[in-house]
Length: 139
Image: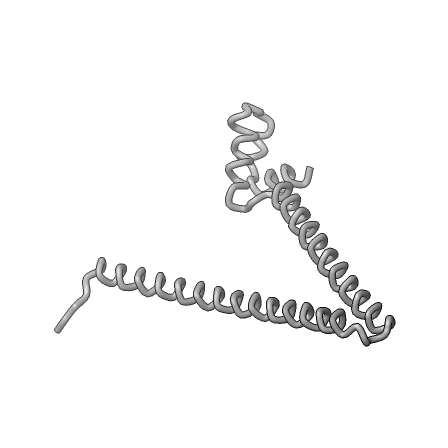
């Protein structure tokens, strides 16, 4: 009859949690690697097809112009995606800076009332913390 003590159970749970986290991270990284590899293969194919069209000078000007137009379109699309991603990241950072973090909202409310020695707001904080937080963040 083997019994596990509480520290052993906690240690086993902790180890299992770490193993699960490592497995999940490895799976995510493998997905990213496959996606990046596919992107590289797509770029390689595009370069090879462009190179073949340039090398095969027997093709008409229309085919050459079509190829350059497709490359131009692809580069514009990549630039737009990059700019949109940067803009979205900027908006996200602005929202995160302006919106309160729920875990620190109470601390911020405490600082703006008690530590600032604003007694009217201290009274409001003491009466109803939730309405004070709402007032504070909806200013």
